[in-house]
View 1 (cartoon, one colour):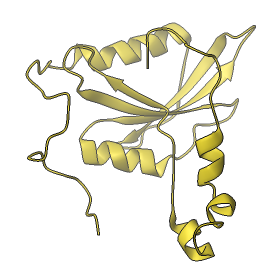
View 2: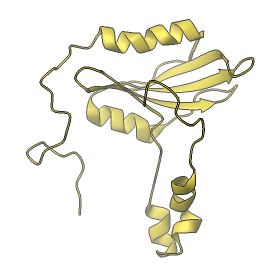
View 3: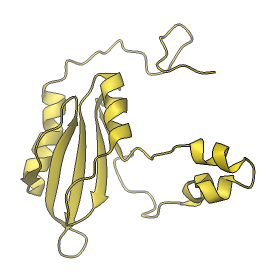
Length: 150
């Protein structure tokens, strides 16, 4: 994510195209159903060495954070924590409250956080991180792959 919001608009074309009803134009119903898909809402990372620090699933909601099992699995595979966060709207494009639940490597309880406390949680990922300045920022063929490809 860039430091500043660029457009304020999210293009939903790919999201609509990837839906089962849409992809059935090209695949069988079973094949279309099998194309599971999530968007990754937030990958916190080190700006210096580009190492991912945490995955966060967000939703605007007055309710509890969602389960987000795929995000939890990705974080577990990457060896980083994952959180599910409900963002409670406040006045005029502000956030009143965050409801935060760690979902990987273990599932914790839901913790309400004011915006300042949530900002400190995000900063904490960097505080506990040992920067790897020599870490590659591009994947190469000799790097291990996760997940089998058929």
